[in-house]
Structures are given as C-alpha cells and as structure tokens.
Image (cartoon, rainbow, N blue to C red; front, side, top):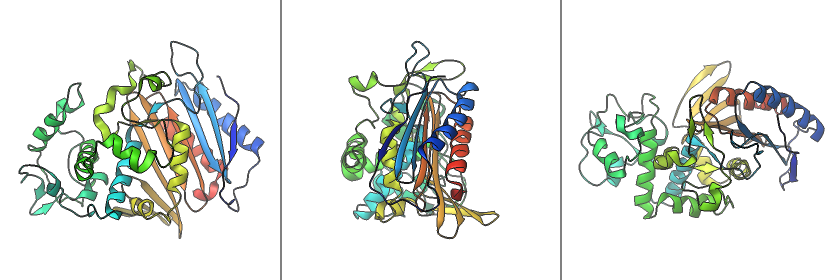
Length: 356
C-alpha cells in the first residue's frame, strides 16, 4: 500500500472545543483504518480529506490506474456520482433566494409542451420533490436511459410516458431521472448550460477549479480510471447524467465545498439543509432528507449531514457536522460504496465522536 505524506494547512476558522487532536494521533488513526480498507482490496486508489479543529489533512493511497503504479494526489479527479445532486440542490436553493423560482412550483411551469401525466389526483410534482426523492419519477425513465447515445430529446420523449402511481411528496422513491430533470429546468430558468451555471454560482466563487462535468484535455490526464470487478470505465461515461451524477472533482475541491456547506448563516446553504421529509429513527435521532443532503439530528442543535455517490467507475462520500466543524471526504475509483461509507464512519467516530 502506498501513502503520500500528510498535507496540512491552517484555515482561518475558530477551533471547536472537544475535538482537538494532535497531528500524529490523526495520522496513526487514519493510517490504521486506511490500511485495513486498502488491504481488503476495496479500492484501486483512494483520496481522503479531513477537516478537524480548524485544519485540513489529506491522504492518498493506491493507484490512479491498474496499468501504472501512480499514487493519487489532492488534485486527482474522480467521478463523484450522486454527490453531484447536492450541487443541483444548492443551485435550486440559490434560485429560490434570487426569486427565480419557488420550491413548491409545479415543475410543468418550466416544461415545454403538455404533461398531464406529471400529477396524481390533481397534485403535481413540485420542484423540491425532484431533489428529495419523493417525486415518484422512476430511477430511470426507460431501459435505454442508461445506454450510450441517450439524448435530452430522448429524455423528454420518455418523460411524456411516465405514470405517477401515488401522491408526489409522500413516498420515497430514489430517482436519478428527477435530479437530471431539475438540472434541465435550472438551465432553462437561468438560460445557461448547467456547466456554466455551476461555475458561476458554486465552483467559481469557491475556487473549485477542477470540478466539472465535461473534462478539459489537461484534466483528463489527472483523472483516475474507474473500476468494477468486471471492467474499467471511462471517467466521462456518465456525463449525460449532468445534475444527477455527472460531476468529477478532487478531494481538494470537495474539502472547500464541505467547509462552505458548514456555514449555515448562508441562506442558500441553510435552505439546502432544510428538511423536505423525515422520520424519527428512535434513540433520540431524527432523519431528514433535505435538498439531497441526508441529515441525521443526533441531539438538539446538532446534526450530521452526508451524501454518498456510487457508479460503476467510482464511490465516494462527504459527511460533516456544521456545529462541531468536523467532516470527511473519501473518493475512490472503485464501485464499493459500502466499504467507503464504513471507512468514513470509522474515522469520524474516532476523530469526532460527538457527531454520533
């Protein structure tokens, strides 16, 4: 197992009481868990970023490719799959704050043509349903939606033939199609391609220079190949998913994004963390689905916010607590989300136990 030296920088945020750790103790703990993770062959390559006690730590393991022994870096690009949806949710929150849309708008307000099928007993699908998995749209609109060559015209053709089976907003049903549709709607609202919109509203202001849907030529050279047990996948395999799962990013960029997401004084951030639907989990914990963030309230005034992503060419997770200002990013070029989620949880439970 290869490992790069810890990269440590100080960021100008106040330290939070109760989570102070020494650099050496953090290194030892991460090394222990990462060694187990990589030793189980759960990933070909992995990058880990931790924000704790006002500092950022990064670690890299394995290789960007099975073809060459090349250690990932903080600038290695990985597919981030459904973590993309949190960006789309944040764009929706920003559109609400800018009075471009309302969360409860009927989605048909932003669609061309007639879609009488996008309602159930007179109740329409609303914008926030699309990013909270209660729209009742299916995972994919048709069998061909996951195949190369599926176009936007194909998407809207299939959208006309969807049947809604219960009231939108009531029952969970995971849907990539819904998030993809929200991305198309936001493009229409702002009259900009989603790539430009992300750059103008999120990645540009946060200086996330390597977070994109379509990779430039130079970026392709710094992108990890994606692997399953049966094959290798091009990082651009899922560009067509756009706002549902098309983004590629680095651990460096996602650490910036995660720290930004801890600032709930920002009205768009706060709105993107607000419950769309939820339930009591027992033991004093409450689960909420926000604008695609998964939120678990573990104590009054304290909540753990996370989102994972998993496609055939990548697995990753972002988890953080705004109150304790602690969090983790794990990115891999392998399809193994269960192992990735366990790794992130094991590290956070040891470094920031008050999150759990």
